[in-house]
Amino acid sequence: MSEPDGRTWRDQQRQAVRAHADADARRRAAEQAEAAKLVAWFVAEATRRGLPPTRLVARGYDGRGRYRTGLTGWYVDRAETRAVDVDGRFHLLNVPGGLRALLFGVEPQPSPAPLVVGAGGRDGESIPLRTLLTRLLDSGTDASRSTT
Figure 1 (cartoon, one colour):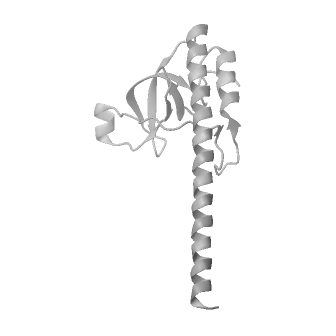
Figure 2: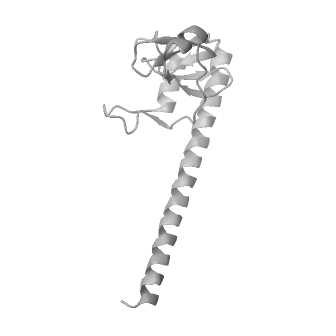
Figure 3: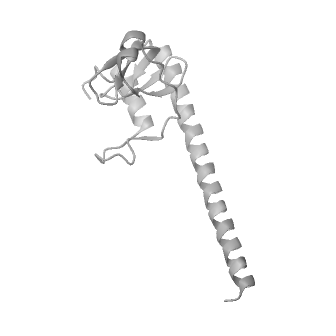
């Protein structure tokens, strides 16, 4: 293979990789936009139905500590590791713990909501976000207190 052929092949490979990455980024952005609409719908519907929000608490990465947050909203899973706040933002409520967190609380940052909660997890259990939010609305209470 001569040098010009090798260079052409490398350029084609780079373009293919770039196109693949761009397509993946567009797909992720579309999924995040759809999930954000679901979360906004949930907050509006929960407010309309009078579903009471609760003070959200974060857990340490080790699962032992519980830390105050300034957030109010609804837990969307029984483990209380995912929540939607009253402003329509999705939060993962696992944080680094420690004495400072215990004394002063924590401020979990919002993250993009997934369309499928638990996808790619080690336990193999995943559920569509729409299903979780609908169950929460139908139960009339937050996920940590529901029996489903």
